[in-house]
Amino acid sequence: MSAIKTYRSVRQAFQSQPTIEGAGVRLRRAFGFRQPQLFDPFLLLDDFRSGAPEDFLRGFPWHPHRGIETITYVLDGDVEHADSLGNAGVISSGDVQWMTAGSGIIHQEMPKGDKRGRMDGFQLWANLPAKSKMTDPRYRGVTSGEIPAVKTPDGAVVRVVAGEVAGVKGPVHGVKIDPEYLDVSLKPGARFEHAVKPGHTVFAYVFEGEGYFGPDAKQAHGDGSLLLLGPGDTVLVRAESKPARFLLVSGKPLGEPIAWSGPIVMNTPEELRQAFEEFENGTFIKSGK
Image 1 (spheres, helix red, strand yellow):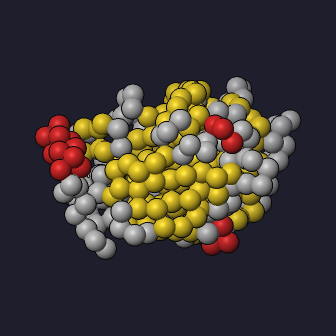
Image 2 (cartoon, helix red, strand yellow; image 1 turned 180 degrees about the vertical axis):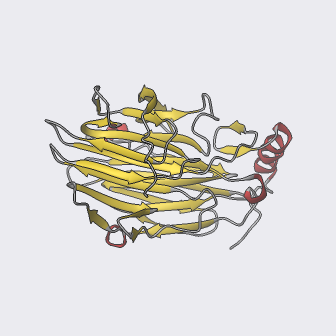
């Protein structure tokens, strides 16, 4: 006898808000800085989609990170990056860069857009557990061709960055928070049903069309909607008269204290103070790997 599914419904709904970051990049922040425990283990999600080069070309010049992972997913355009360890490259359309800042890295990210002057993408910050805060920095660079696209019987098309859909696993694995990161597209009339781990935090961010989240959902959520989903073991999303495209992200909560200022996230105020002192006195970088 099969177990009864418990479907996740929308626990809280938010709308992404305009903000300015870096050297003057105009973007929309879905969540971040306020109520950091609400999306544990995730800290921040920025939506930097724009068709105006003046919104993004100033970029994010040299800045430090410690204690977190940054996940950059580019839909369209190029983002040039470089760091204090000598790494450099370009994140292009469809690519993902999963950077573990760990003990500390100083880097820059400079969006360049595409030939039309458009730049579309997202950056997600994930927290590291206390025991891994000071791990060596590393990158997982994933090209568009390495990310599988799965077509489900109910009409969904899913790019699997991390996690598993219909037996197909994404290329990012071995991450402390056991994440799933899915880019889901639904045509009108299609639906997506997906098993998630009951104890994990799960959220969706809608960036095209509109979708209905939950088996009995009556309200559609459209572009810029951030949805924190409640308890359960299954996510069900359907599109009706309009298509829908959204990120579906989940991860294991850490349940640890958060001491956060700007690009550095630690567990205690003392650790945070020490990180900024090290940045000021030139001892911030711990690893040459």
